[in-house]
Figure 1 (cartoon, one colour):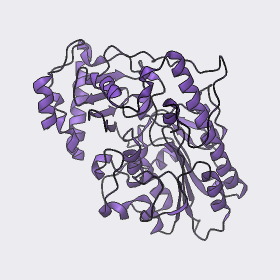
Figure 2 (tube, helix red, strand yellow):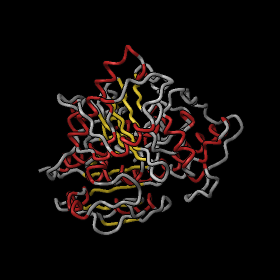
Figure 3 (cartoon, one colour):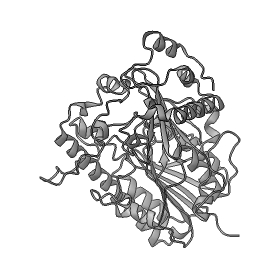
Length: 455
């Protein structure tokens, strides 16, 4: 009987999906991440469940949407009665040696006891690669599940606030070497009112006062922080390869959420823009095959789908409950006969005005709905408008598509018991007309009290 594969899950914090050279980005060099892509499949339509650390991370290790486990902000813990269904417990109780190094943040910054993992390293990007390498070099009587969780490029938050960077500085951009501004740098005329109000209310969004040159430097610094992580990843992968364990290891690379990267003049996360919600996701299955494939078809949720994928390769039955989809059929057959038609992302601006939001991505379109304000409803044709600059929600010709997505989201809210979603009364809201506000006053009061959507 063949030995079950080792599993290596490497993930970063706040890395935008295109911040790697294997995504055809000429402003960055990531040879380690690229080497995983050369061996596996890079998923271009991969999303987090929530563009904020703790809710997204909690999804990864439970395989459920944040609202299903009662987490919608940082500082919240996974409930005790759900602990045994966490990925660490499930694999360790089924014969895997489960170890964790680096950032946990659910809510403790370093992983404590009680989650099925043995901690090999606390919260430190400096020590993490070395500790992972030392673990791989040990004799292993059982297959292992190793999680290497880097903090960077999250240090872009400190950089934007002109604070010392915890894991060392990044070089200042040489003259003329900053990346260009993104094509969608401008703020759309139909941007939801709530976003700039939240930006003004939250101190962490210091970049709201940036000049265009500041934004270019921001993008440069973000890429350098990713390259620092990539060097650490190379240390881990080199030891895995030198010990001959790479061919029997499932390797996964991803991030908990993205970063605004100056698109729409937005930094940080929480907004439902593509830069914040779309994440890098590369999966290299065990075996000798070299895939080197890019998948631009399947809609993937790293918070929902990594759990069943890991269980599938480990030969472990998942506990009962709602879960995502295993990527194994896509990896091994390049297609899956049954796949989802949409992915949903939740958000909450914690500490500001408390704006909630939901995003639904379908094959061609993206629908966003915020809980209050002018232009709170958005519909984008991502095939023709990947920068999300033209809101189609007010276009008469797009009303069938708009209503279709309203109805799909209403069904999702009902099926997943999304309690925060009680304010999404979208079937009762008039179609958006550019320049016309949704009912304010009464509309916002009713929204905060809650109105269940009706398909």
